[in-house]
Length: 128
Image 1 (cartoon, rainbow, N blue to C red):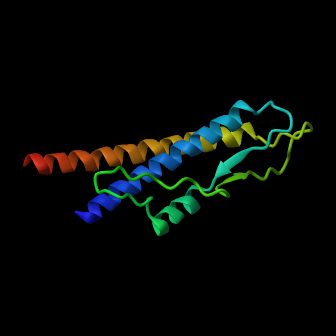
Image 2: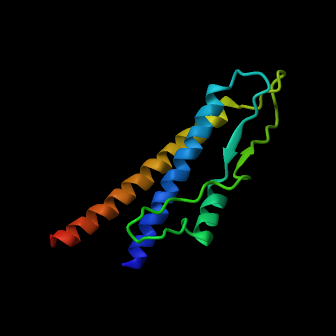
Image 3: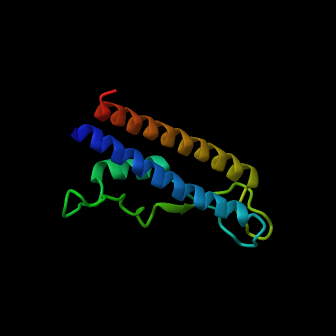
């Protein structure tokens, strides 16, 4: 049962991190015409590995809901741009849109996988 619990926690953490990344990418897209705006991003792979090694925030009671640790201070980084615009904006709209679309698909895939796991557990509990 502990393995299932850890798996569900990891999937929840991945969803939280993907949602945060989508917020950042959407902000980049929204500010694509803002002078001197610097595009930001989160390295998902690095952050999820940090979560795996540290685990969730400890709780004092088994009935408390564990949450993912906040992204480390260095998690949100400025994206390096090869050709910044003349006004200093580093957002490359096509890149941001592609990253946003890919991250959204991965979010949906993770959510579908998590729902499948929960449905399987519910079927097992009900004896179906």
